[in-house]
Every structure is written in C-alpha cells, then in structure tokens.
Length: 203
Image 1 (tube, rainbow, N blue to C red):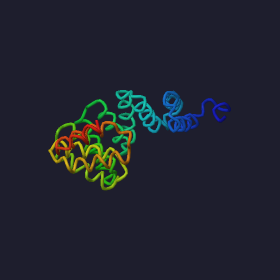
Image 2: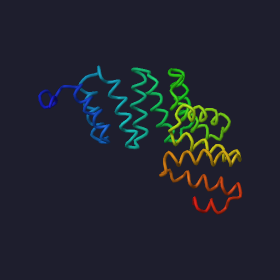
Image 3: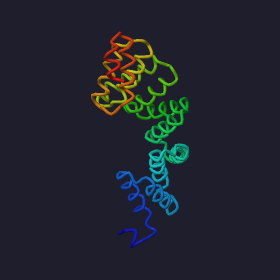
Image 4: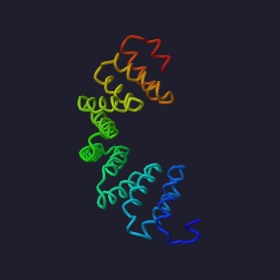
C-alpha cells in the first residue's frame, strides 16, 4: 500500500524484500532490493546484503558474493563475512571461505555458526585436527544443530574413530531424520566396527 501511494519509497521496497525472504519468494526479493538500491543509496548496504542472501538461496552463489562484497565495503559487519563465507563454501572455494569465517569470528568471537562452517571447510581440506576443534565448539554451543554432529561424525570416520563417529551420527539423525547422507556415513562406521547387518540396514 505504501508503494502504491509513493512508488519512490525506497524503504518500503527494502522491507517488502525482507518479508519476501521470510516467505521464500527470493526472486521477487531480489527485484525489490534492486529497486531499493536504485532509489536510495542510503539503504544500499542493507539492500546489497539482503540481495546477497536472497541470491544465496537461489543458488546464485557468484552473484551473492558480489553483493555481499559490496555490503562489506560499505559496512564490514560479521554477518556479511559469514554469509559470503557460506557462498564461497558452496563454490568449493575453501580457503576464501575460511578467510571469511576467520574475519567473522574476529569481529564476533562467540558466533558459533562461524566455527561450524569453518570446521566444515577444514574437513573438506582434510585438516581434520583443526576441523575437530571447531566442530567440537559448534556441538557444545549449538547442541541442536544436526550439521555440527554430522560433520563431526565424518571427521571421526576419517580418523578411524568409528565408535565415536556412530555416536555423532546417531545424534545428527535424531535431530534430522531426513539427513540421508548421515545414514551412509553411519553405515561405513558400523562396517568398520564389524556390525555388517546394522550397516546394511542403514544403507
């Protein structure tokens, strides 16, 4: 209604875009944030940040990184580095992603999602000791996060600590029974412990 009364009302487009993110209408959110940027540079940092978030959900990771980089230049907040780190992780740019999470954690030391995603990057880089440190912090402070337990299980599996891997993967599946890849990982761990029948059941 506000936009109908004043089609140049930049802040209305900004908040309309935020509402569209909440309702998963990411394409329309991108359009509204773009209008916000064009109408009023005063909202540009927020609009670039949230357009980057919307593009992340649209799996437009390179475009998301471009927006989030602009947001960082205008307002280097830890959440912008965090979101850009997630986009870099999706592109398998693990070192760049770690750098983003390093900065996010320097800016906000108790932001434990940052430890989780940095640990995931370290897992893919096969730096298991460092990954385990970050993932243990994530599990401690985000006990209901299935990903933290899942990736901790994967690290345990890689270092041949299969019994503890099973415990982690049990927890991950208790939190998220639809995490199908956790069943496969748990099957491998059970196979390693000689429990072939349970492994086949998971598969």
